[in-house]
Length: 187
Length: 410
Image (cartoon, rainbow over all chains, first blue to last red; front, top):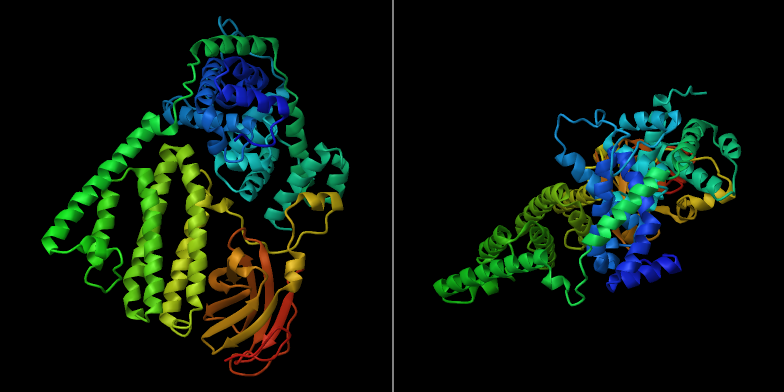
């Protein structure tokens, strides 16, 4: 059975989607796709890739939904979607050609047709993004999931297969490093 | 304040501020030593969560939905897990493996003229049929897929432990070596296998991890029970072997738990070294509960030493469930726990020092015992522990008598 903490409407949609109702699944998509898409853009930094991955996340979610209660292992639906997205990001970097480094992935051009435009981002966001690149992969995942996606340490722990204590410590070390990278002066 | 505590407080402050229970400034004032990290955390919250989907993103999300809904396959409600191609393959492989096991078993049975293979399942190390039992296990491993291997390794480590129990009950202590070696090897193989599964299929690894950890936890409890079994209580060598097994078990659990491919070794929480200052009530509630009450109720029962080794016995609430290890001078030692009683053997113990007990489950400090013994027999004045977390102190003599926490020794 799905996680008991689901808000009522989500729970209803999940049950209907499990039963094969595509409209209900569409409502789940409307509710969560924005977060997942933005998280994927944040992680892979390539809009077209993030768009394909978003589609893949929801396609996998549809296929796996009947087993959500068992595979979710206590995760709520949102965290479960993030886990699917996270696994895709891991696969993406594992199979990426070595010469294409994380730092050198080109930004998409604003003239892109089907998925237009770079969203204007503040300098602050760019600074944070640059600092994040300097963290190790696990710390980057934890900070992104915690502060960008708003998942709590328990959800991140389940998602990454870590203990909650580990997640907090990784987050703490990440914050420490980020502070230095963002050029803040320690008092 | 150690790093683990600081990390907890950062998280608690973030939650308290988000819930409106606490202001950012109040957090900075209350925890000046982590004000920098807190400030960074709040800045990240502002910058990253402040982003809202742009119009172009909304458009892209709509386009993705159109593509997705066109590609969604109809759900065949009649399909069950057993019809899933991957599951079917798994089942087929298992069936194939078991078929071979049965064929080989039958041939061997015919050759030996008896149901030797089947009889060998009850064989113990030292028995004539024991090698046949190991051969059958190896054969099963050879034919099983990776995930099946992990389950088989778990099953075989259980076999080794059961064999040890039976050998100890029969007082066949000389035959323990083979079972212990087998346990150690199979546990290590299982850990290696898990690393491989983690790399190839994180989802599958995630599911297996919980199962393996639970089973290893149960095995650790059985080992702790064996350590205080009357047949081996005074058998130093067996005690040492069991401690080694317990160490392997604990380390394997910790490493599997940390999914070491993704988490550097250094991120495994270190044992706490000092207490955090008292936190505001609303933040205190958000952190993992400190074990203050537990610390107060725990006590030293007995201490004994002979100049080479020291044996400490403590009463620790729920010790068997928690699993207990000791730490002294940066070295860790496994302890045997039965019910609320914990026995820790410390080889080459110094004449004075601080022995900290931690839970194997969560690395929480359970008890801290500051001692000052003259192992040659002169009773020394007791020394109180230096840090706030030290809740016990004592002194003792070579027979462990005397001192605040000391009891009767050998």
